[in-house]
Length: 512
Image (tube, rainbow, N blue to C red; front, side, top):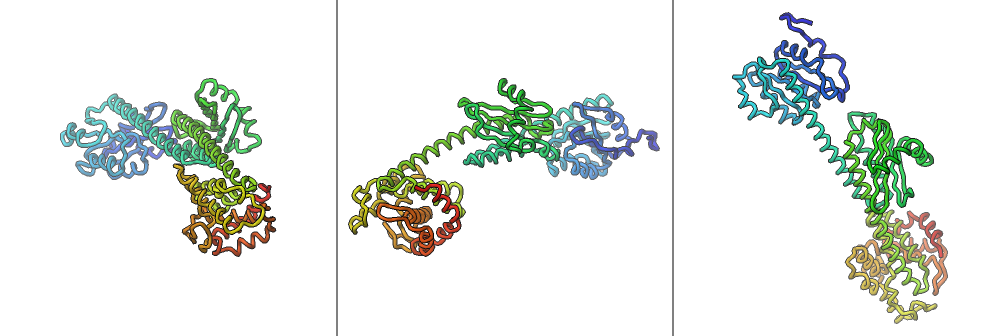
């Protein structure tokens, strides 16, 4: 307990069992005099701040102090001597802390027994310290007040840093969600981002102990819900929500704010259109690593994003409906059914997916393919509805539908329509150059047109037309396969054959 000089000695107890980091403030004492450590221990041993006790670490040189700071980057305060193994060891450690270790949060209280060696004004100006004290003047009360001031400053900086990191996580998560243009993928990404936001790497059990429930409503009717943990079972999740969180949800709806208890966290948001979003986090809510207000901001941003996604989806679906109706009108004029354009669209989508095209490209193929014959609107009924074979002059007029379709669509400012204009123009081109209207070959023909051309031929051969009966499907597949490198792009043919099972299912689903 006492050393040879009669001073209290606590250094033998410095290896006492450590409390959890979140329950203490770590204090480092760096001084080459054992008596200074003992007296500091005596003053600070029973001290606490904001309900947290102090955990003291001891170093007897600047080198040892640097080692401890590397191992304990969350140190709150360091009481640092100036003169130790060298005359400027303490000042050099200050620079190491700020520049080499990059620790800007640690509060540094410089203590010196030789103020003339390190003048206060010079040190404060030239070194990034937070307090300067003469050991001879550092009474118990002054050490206490200096420590409280330093801890309050450290606590505030940690909160600011945590909120900054939390805000960065919110922005990154929101940005990730904003990149999702598919409603199905939106929900999967949302669940993933909520998990990322609430995860605290220092509390390994946190994320695994938290269950998440997410639901969206339109006109008070649920349109989607998902969950993890206790909400993972589709059959029981709604019942669980009603039983355990019913009152909390009602409070959140009534007060239009989030509700937090020790056991759960409920977020609710409703927009002017009547769309509602509900998120429930069940578990130890105190372990959530992000501030409540930031998490609430994220929820509101996601609700707005979902509204925009719904509106965008409605617009896309309306555009698709318009395109299909226009395409069906052209087909009906030639006494072909509207199911033809749907089959071609879905065939083309399957092939595009098999070829590994991007989500956007697959969508473009799906919407552009039905418009391949839109130019037939400008072809006379006498030719379109002729039951027998066309003569040479009539066939030339029929072939003009490719150019007419292109001319009809090309002037649109919308990319999709311009893409469709190329499909309309080139879908009768052959891979070997034997097609029309331009005699293009190989890669001169747009990939979307190569895909659509094959789909159009397959459907034309496999269905009954006014001028012919339907071929047996086996013969149609053989025709397509033999047409590789001649009429059809071989890569497109292979993708088509790889999706044969799906193609046959589509034939049955959209049969006339």
